[in-house]
Image 1 (cartoon, one colour):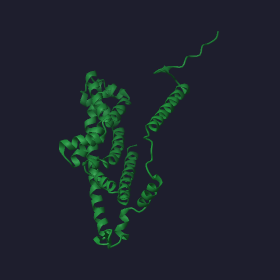
Image 2: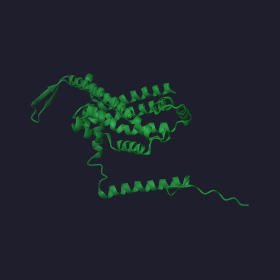
Image 3: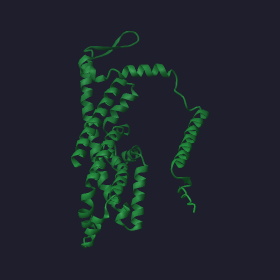
Image 4: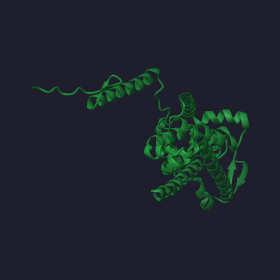
Length: 298
């Protein structure tokens, strides 16, 4: 008696396995081609005038970061008008030393914004994640409402939150902290909920069977199991927010972004190179620290 081969399952109208993957790749290729074709047709795919000359000049400026002037800059730099008259004289070493001091203060402000914003976001996201996690069986209307809040939080960019909050609380780090918190709350909530849903519910049910309340169930059945994952998620989002907070100064929310905006607007590429080096060093240092913490939790 001949056996019939089981049919391939179909999801969202696509066959499973390689055929479904090939279909998705083909769809993606068509989408990319459509994006390129529409940009070309509209004349928006352009590299501007003299792109190579501009690139070489920019690379040359970046190749000598401004912090080198603290040691190697001219001690008497004259700025002259077209007719040769001296407009002003400055000591580049003193000027760049003052700039580096400002960079140090802005770096600390950026770190403060990322740190406080990340902590506030995690605290706001935790109760929402508990409502969203399906295995904790929260009332459905509350779960839907919490999921909607988290989805909106993730959908709105940090800069948009920052623009709104600058108009509400004014210029300064407070707007940056709140902008980081409101956007990151959605990311934290999703990550925390997924960690809770991956739990072995036997331990949770055992605690619930003793007659414990919901708070006791969480702190005795859920919290000990998910804490390492929560810490790992917190370190990841915190690191991301350090990068994200560097641009909030563009809208007046404090930190390195203000100096970056000034350097770009004045075409001071050597100073921008210094600022980017600081950003990269800050992220690399925090990444090394967070890796050590994750290893300690294993």
